[in-house]
Amino acid sequence: MTRILKFTGALSCTLALSGAWAAPKDQDDVLLWVAAEVEISPEGTITALQWKDTRKAMKTITERIEPAVRAWRFEPGTVDGVPQPTVTHLSLRLRAVTNGDTVAIHVDHASTGAKSSLLAHPRYPVSAARANADAVLVANVAVSADGATTVESIDFRGNRPAYRRQFVEATQDAIAKWSFVPERVGGRPLATRMQIPVTFCITTIDCEHKYPAPDGESPRVGPPGQPVALESAVRLIDAVAGRAL
Image (cartoon, rainbow, N blue to C red; front, top):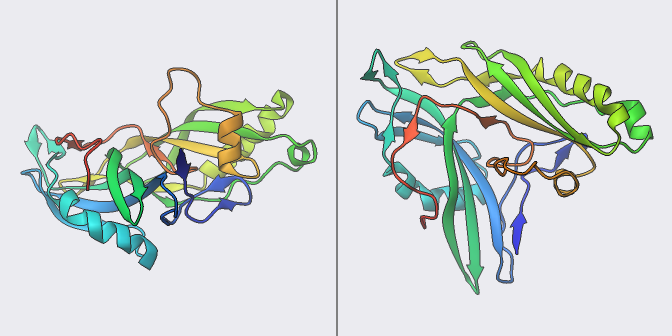
């Protein structure tokens, strides 16, 4: 069985943002996410790394995996075809497998891209809440070089289609207040695209079970409620999926 641990729980029952890791006592798989800002040299090596979550519980994980992560090789961003120093946001989905008193950590997925800077809490539409309506929305968003957002499209899945408009408007209102920190290549920020899941439900996990992704759609690679980069100036050269850390 695989368990997903959220970092702090839901915000206003609509947006789960981060999480903390704790090993279960019985043998089990646990999914956890860690993220860092990394600087990559023109040669493709990490020259600086700063973990996003510095709490003691997470430092137990990040200190263990950092030596291996720092050894990974990347293809940095380029300007006119010439590799440049690049600053990106590295997001890792890890799988912790416990066996007795030992814990093995494996890479499930690794990605790079922009990172969120400000996330306004979506407001649950009052009329929808009174009608016990819930929903999962996924927004594709264009991010300018200054971090501002423009919604390109919104996918809706919910138990009361009559409330689709209210949920979409609440999502658009929240995203309009959001901002991102783009990747920087040669010191210059790059425009990009992000995908943002927004959940209007008591808990994110419950809604994901009720409204699974359509067939053919990739499973979530980020924590519940966290934006996911749709493109990046950086490419991870090493095949790290499945690798033990």
